[in-house]
Length: 358
Image (cartoon, rainbow, N blue to C red; front, side):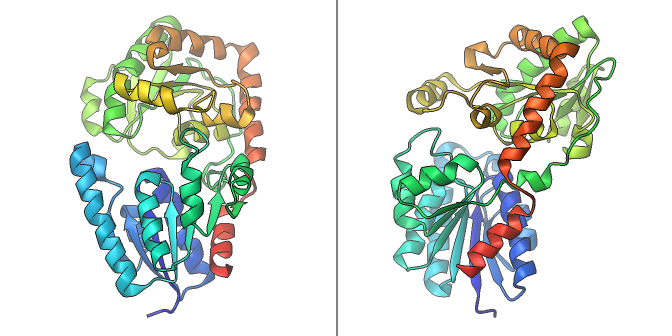
């Protein structure tokens, strides 16, 4: 067995894709590395051993209480692995609520912890930085302003660039088709999709009647196809070549909105939570915007329709305004400018080099 044993963990799909790419880069730089992981199918496919699937908890239909006990058992399994196998390094990807406990377990055994893709502590609960500082050797951050945030808190941090720069191709054709083709992104989590599907489909109905627009619904749920009107086509394969065809996007905040921004696709961001979760977020949120494009730009370049504003009439009106010729190209250029802020290509390799040489 290789001397350089590494454990890596990711708890959601977007983070796991970045983690899997990091593993590939580590293996390319040092094929002797023996990788053990917890995550999902992406990490499992590139690891030498796999401990547990924690990415697909939502797909299991677990209730929150069951999720808690499931993750508690996984944490115990990982802690036992640390004690018996004593990996040389631990890499954690986002997913703070679970990974802070993994980091503490590694710290107790003096195993260095590297955090790749920082939890968004700048958006809420900044007190989490102190806990990360106590358990993590180095933060490898993917948003430019995060490096200073952590360094000011005494955390060794380096901005390695955003891995989406390597994943998202540059779109070159920005002519609006006639009729316009609009992408609908209801979200990836079951609870989010249930809230968003009625809103995006009603918005599509309004836009189809007023502009003749056609739509692609990007979803992992094949069962929804039979309930879609004829002007909405289902796309299961959410690859960027398909997405480059759309002129506009209606999507939630998060990774998908940043991907669309890097493609230069104007959009309307919407998000609706349960009333309890919404008011909870309102109490702890410390940022003015929820869309990464707006946070990076420091101003509102993407309209946001949150909770009570997430109604089809308002979203449809915003779409029609942004599709006007005099507004469209200027919006495209504002979004494409964000690529320059997120570093240069080769992000996974840079992160791997830092971890292996540290």
